[in-house]
View (cartoon, rainbow, N blue to C red):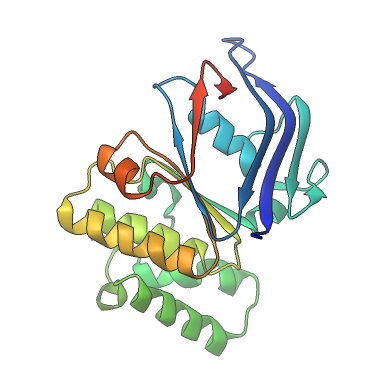
Length: 218
């Protein structure tokens, strides 16, 4: 049986200004499995998954990561296990080049340079980015930015990855590259949750699906 990486239990979160509330009685997301999150715009899908990775903290209830209550965890500790890819990948790319993006955090944390470089090269090769190693992030296509953001996230030993509308604006070639990247992660035992309205993705990966309606998981 697959291990539960993320669990929301009796969670409620309310935005102070709009008073819109997202509720989740019990949700488990597992290693090595994909879950598609569907629902109308404004239904609370993104809020739900931001609660799953600690970007938002519940007003009521608990987020568990690998069975541990994260109430007192800083966001950085949650981020060691859970990665989040925003709908616009450029928002989480901070350095000048592809190589800098891959090695920046590891260098800050004092990782051994040879191991850091080997890990970065391996991931760039797996995500078909090795030929772009010295390219400015400002000269990457949207699909290349997405794959770079995923690869850079995997420089940490995450157990789960959340993607928000990852196929938006992608052509056929970059869609294929994204699907290949997703399948690599699943085969490596990393769990994935994807917010999507994309019919192609829904038909391709429709096995596990949850729907959010008016802030409720149904």
